[in-house]
Image 1 (cartoon, helix red, strand yellow):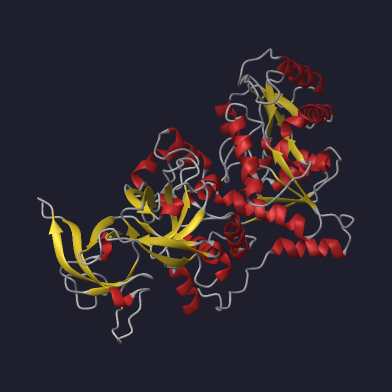
Image 2 (cartoon, one colour; image 1 turned 60 degrees about the vertical axis):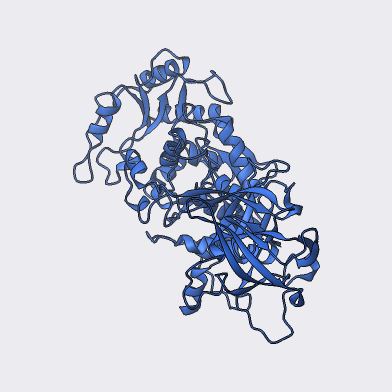
Length: 564
């Protein structure tokens, strides 16, 4: 889409309307306080980016605060590596929690005290059924649950058992603490949900201090209350859990934030499930969490996506109350192209090199031609590139038996070498297998600068590099990690492998212009006629750049917007 094309109207955000009404009625004393509560059991993906932008963005827009709070209540799956990666992702997206980085583990003692209060109120009990037995007693949507035989233990018995659970007397699974609500409740979540379970595991922050850990539903609402949150924003899968959120806080008569649910992000071509992404990483199907094909924020960053593009994408998709719509991956690429089109310098790179020798060009002559870094932004400057007898061009820019409307190089056909000269192919050199390995061409010295004064019209313009001065480089081209439509049908992580695209990455050995020899990792550019690229943050070394293709130049999504 051109810069002059009017952008489509942004989708509505129903939560903004709620906040504005709350501020009008002074419901929270004019405060807006949100939180982003990730579990440190994996890297964040693009779906989490929507939640980050929503929670931090609303706080910023309405002069409020947003906490970063880690829900670290399951030590068997958590790691400091995940904590560090989440912090890095939030900062990279452009948000700051200031001095409000909290952990559920900060509240373990207070949470335990709340559980004790529920026991004393007769609203919680220690259950000794196994996990399978609890599941069977819970019932179904059409069959009410049945009460545990341990449900009517006295408060004194429950308190004694709970204290002994904390002291480590019992093995994992021997007992759980459950809320005492209603086993016939139409909302299955409210059928005596588990509040605490025994787990003898080392915690990354509290060590071996605890061997009982609170469940998410119990931790979440109380943490919101402790922190003075006003608007607790969750995705739709927690809609049924809101009733339990309210029950805990009402029963304990505590400060009570309001939970709101919004539709989660679903996208074509990607899987947004930590469980499935962990499987891809652990089985070596990808090169770690930051593999440029992964839908993780770190993967997008390594591939060359910008925080501005992701924030724009999250704004464009809006925030809906409900719905199972799937966002076209092309919209994310469109947002990226719009951003990079303005800021990415244009440089030369040849990905699939084919030698071009100018037979009538002096052997030792070196011309220099001025190349702007951006055709529409002279303030970005320019640089000079050397031109010699032997050049590299793209192999895909030559066709021996070319069709009628082929405007690139072919035997007897003339093209323009960008900013340099006109050349005409006069001979083709093959190796023993018959593969074309070199083109012999003649140049017209009168076309210096790439223009003719005699009225000749040449439609084809090719990019090139001086073979003598070009720097070897590696290029990594990516396609979607999954086959067309594959991820949408994946419900079992074991079947992920069958949906993987075997051609999701292509590695090429080519050349770049001399000034890119010591490219800084993470540097963005547009290789002319090829696409937007980023120097790989992990693989790029001085004198040996590795470039990831961030996205191609074609923006089919923008064309669809213009049609619509």
